[in-house]
Length: 337
Image (tube, rainbow, N blue to C red; front, side, top):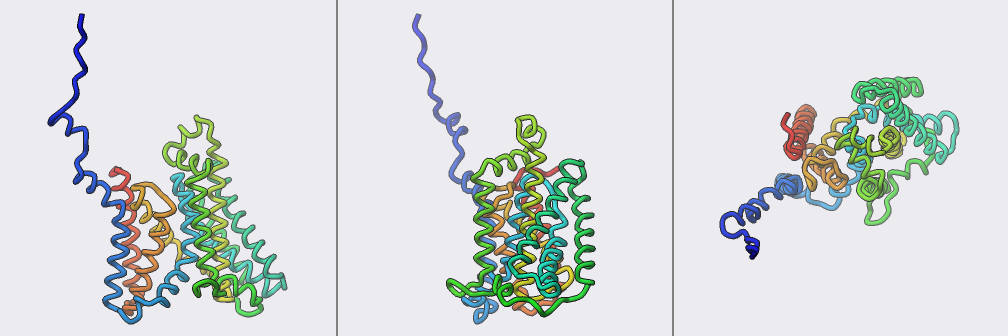
């Protein structure tokens, strides 16, 4: 008995299995939409303010102003990867920065020790959030909203709700403001190092891969042996450390502490991370996307300021960007429910 040779699909049936070049292009275009938007935005502001926007000095200014936001957005990317929220990091920024300033100016603590204590305080804030969410089953949104209020209260107790100026060592101020290679300040390089470390952590380590698994399906990750509780605690600690670094950079740049210095970073940080999830890996939080999101917001902020627009307009634009970022993220992930 002879066996018929296998049939090779040809014609129209074979074409169905292969997406056309046009279809592939359409599918890939959204991954780079934010990059295109960034370039277009630079072009628009450059055309409107050619003498001031398209300059090396303005580029340095954008990178410098974006540095603290970059640091907190990197930490926020880690917890959002696990589908968790943290609304307390803005308050932690203020608390950690104020703590360092108070220790130096009012208690004579050396700047090195003050920095270490501020970092420890940030880690403690994250640890508190992580334990309450992971081991006590608290809702991350409600818990971090509450702990953020606590952190603000502690900051007010430490500073008596006063702006603290004076008594800050010069070396502490140089943490953020000292200019090094290419005339960029230290905080730009600190932010770049944090971003690279964040990318390596999420993309190149088992911890990062496990965090992605938790974000995909927490119960499946737990049943497969992943220590979900410990990793969620670690994620919140990373956010707390990022908040501490941002607080140190902000108070170092000003050589002073003002009440709730971190409050303006809450919405921009979320906007940057959600914008980043709409680029490179659609619908997935990723560090390269977060970096592009931060730079995009920095360009928008600087450009609107150069156009002498009112503060209310700037806030409306920032809020609209956050809404757009969330919608783009959901569209990219294929979720419409």
